[in-house]
Amino acid sequence: MIPAVCSVAIIDDQPLIRAGLRMVVESQPDLRVAGEGGDGAEAVALARAHHPDVLLMDVRMPGVDGIRAIPGILAASSATRVIMLTTFDLDEYVYAALRAGASAFLLKDAGPEQILAAVRGVAAGDVLLAPQLTRRLVEQYVARAPRPSSADGPLAALTDREHDVLAALAQGLSNAEIGARLHVSEGTVKTHVSRVLAKLGLRDRVQAVIAAYELGLVVPGESGRA
Image: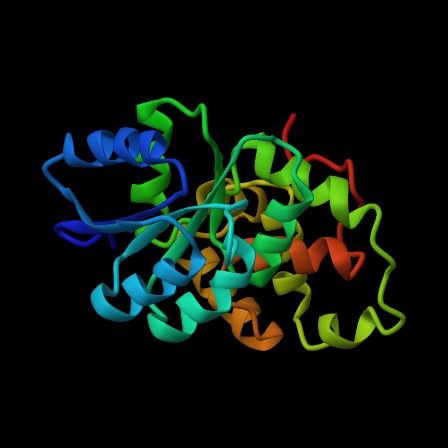
């Protein structure tokens, strides 16, 4: 559920980028800016002090970059969800950030509507998976990564239905689309997703997608859409 007023922190070493993001956030009655900073160290301090619902953060910054800051942010404020900002749509640093616990990523030239949709979606726990950029980035880098030798181990803990749900998540399907495919309710899908995350020790849906590719459950290039 999205908070009545969602607090958003903005971290970028470029003042103009921060100013633009602030204008977008402050234009909405249900969003407020909790603070801003210019590097990863300031992001951790801001998370510790203000516990924002969502933190918009650049990947590449001088000093402590966005990737190195993520563990500190999550340790300081476990409820904060991180959206990474990048100039490039296929950036290995963004993939590393997703693996570290970021919930989504956006291109810096994203329009206001995309930014607002991302903030609200991540705040609601519906992590950005549907946009093709996220799934394409995961596919691009997992395809290059070596497969773990014990790929069947973690997946063995899942039921057949949980396997199906995880595979559908990795293919970019929403809960409603998964429910339609498996002929179950959306509520049932949410229950299965929660169980998959718990059994695999994953933080959110993005990490579930990465796990599905890395464990070989889904082959890079597969698509769950017609």
